[in-house]
Image (cartoon, rainbow, N blue to C red; front, side, top):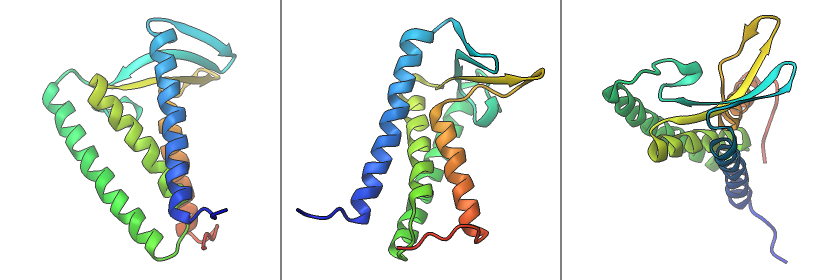
Length: 159
């Protein structure tokens, strides 16, 4: 039996996160479109489209803004992929980078397919409301947090 190599593990990780997010967005479009479901006292499932960037910034109806953002996001994804590949070739574990990439690619797929990103997780507590987001956004944030911890030396990931 052949042992999995690191590139295979990263491809598997990327696909798992991508598939989980794609399924969650398909579900949101199919079952949440136009309605809101209260799940917990601090969590609603509430469908929305986001044509902007994080936390709904630059979320306007200007098509030029959308196309420019999409173009720059594509460039950032390509550059971050190149960075991740370089880190991998230095024998560093890049699981956090791959998690971040999977979220970014899934949100980019939304931009291409729908002209906006599907958001549906709506957290709130004590009168404060977090901007609606999706699982890909969570993967991006968790991946970035892991990269920061690695950079600070608080976690050490080497093969």
